[in-house]
Length: 556
Image 1 (cartoon, one colour):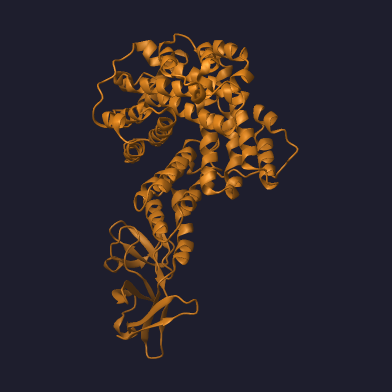
Image 2 (tube, one colour; image 1 turned 90 degrees about the vertical axis):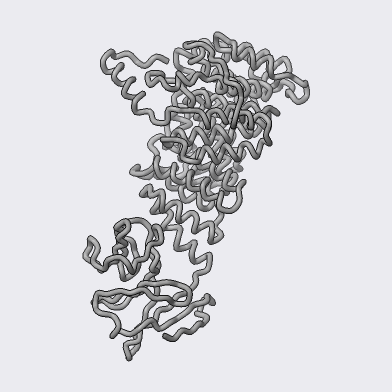
């Protein structure tokens, strides 16, 4: 065989090699060969001669050991018999399976000599080839394809933010209730992918993308309406006029409003109500952080859709169980709270309020207001909320978690910490009376996370050992990185558990830095490593049986 190298017109290095002659190939036959360092399978059919990479892109098994036949459309195809993937011979397209296989130019001269040209693609060319494949993998929820394409993209110099955004822009427009846990998880996973280096980045990216794929598969995409700057955004959100509110957001982005201006509108909207056990504020925080990392030029892919969970989430402050708390909130001079001295200036100690929050028998709004005015400031209140919820996580009775008829557990308590983190982010970025109210909502939630304790009694916290003990004494970033890896190590049996594991660890890392206490990380460590109910079918059946047979709603 002869080989030669040359520079093609684009300046890429290519190898062209004679791999045999037509006489050596029976019709409808194939054999393995090499061109330079690349192993290929050369195929002859009635349509001509073709050359494909020999390694199946699934797990690398040789296609030359497979079967040559036809696919479902009757086109000549190679079947990789390890997992029955089929590749169209003419262009390498995978017609059953996931990724395509690379196909290379073939020429046959007048003497019947067969030459194959293999060009080493540049990173830019590889990225161009891989982006559509990654999108197909996300749309089909093929976790293997998502993983392989993400790794190949990283190896070809793709930025983590660009890889994650392929999922975000697909998923944000699909969920009926708007972007939710899956996009919040993507925000945390992108943060980790940018903190970590090398191969570690792949785990964070693929967990985020897989969550989006699972939650968006099969949903139709929602379109963004034409921009309309005349809409009253606050009024549209309050009245659940989604299309109008989305049109205003699109107009604000189109006219070039600053990110801080749009952030203010969203923060103010979620501060008007206690939305969905804190989800409203958490989603706003995560999605603006996601845009900070991925680039504001992508805002139109995400922010209009954020209107749905902000506007349509359950407004718990309007429900009977929050009535007394809301009467107390409505009597508060929020302006005075917003202008109170900060705990960094007063030297305020959060531990007294932490104990009071844990011992409260009723919504502790008055306690929270008094603490803010007495020197805690808004951030001091949030310190105490975080520490109180951390204590609840550390002493959570695992017998409650094992009770399939109990409708309260780990995930509910974690919201007390992640909500406090979202309120702190809102206060630091958009302080004012509205975010002071949001902080009061977190005090109510800190109280509500004690529902199981008030119903079953306060469990004694186990003596710290293992990961919990390490979290109490270790370096914040090292502990948080270790917990984040554990959270993403397939310890959650369902997407929602994985999302809560990751966001709790991330909130604990940040809250440990703000409070100066390792307690949040210790709480996250217990959550990550303790037994959990990781699927909710049995609990749903128990609740549904009771409701269908009695007509009673679940006990709150």
